[in-house]
Length: 154
Image (tube, rainbow, N blue to C red; front, side, top):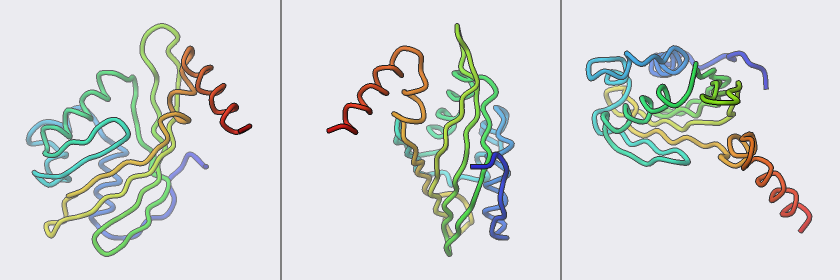
């Protein structure tokens, strides 16, 4: 996949969401920040590790991302829109922290549904934690790759 955005629908909700993700910064998570304008107060969010509801909980997930990782950034590759929803594919680039820190990239997708006010009401991320994350880690990665080879042979 190219590391560049592709054309997107001209829906202003989608434009705002894509810009939000691609320029996301810690200050956007403040109670009066951009997160509160993009997401509905009772929005639901789910990814391979979390399932939460409400702005404070969603803000905490993004906040943890900034604490745990260096230079996290999203590059939205494609947007496929419906009437009140969009499916985004993206690359998430970051540097791990600690000893042996290195640049990593996770490829994934998000399904977003908008409410009547044009805010994200539902956000579900899809990405393969085993392939996109665990296999890239120094110790557990070797075990995950071995398990994958074993499963493929069966």
